[in-house]
Image (cartoon, rainbow, N blue to C red; front, side, top):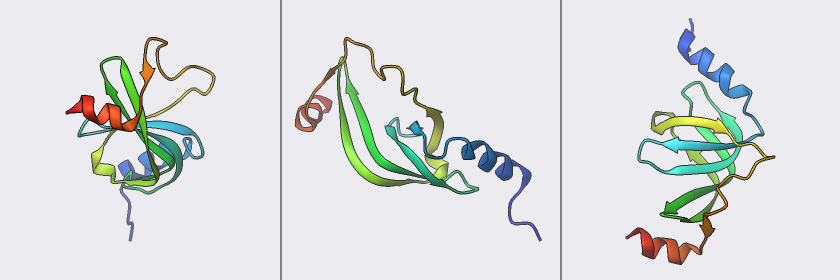
Length: 106
């Protein structure tokens, strides 16, 4: 008796290459999460270590720390590896505090 179908096995295999790498995960609700992939399962549920939510308003951004974060696979739109050699954001972006970004977001 098999528990996983062929599509689930291929997804699990493709995520294995991202283990212990810094990723960006885009969610269905539009949120952008960054962190290091430490675990996943056949349903694309993922666990990010040192996760943060990147909130962007205009040319301002803030990385809101989340810690160890579990993401349900059905909410994942895209998973991509971040290049450690390159800057993550364009030079015109300015980092602000969590309080400032929450005020601007509303």
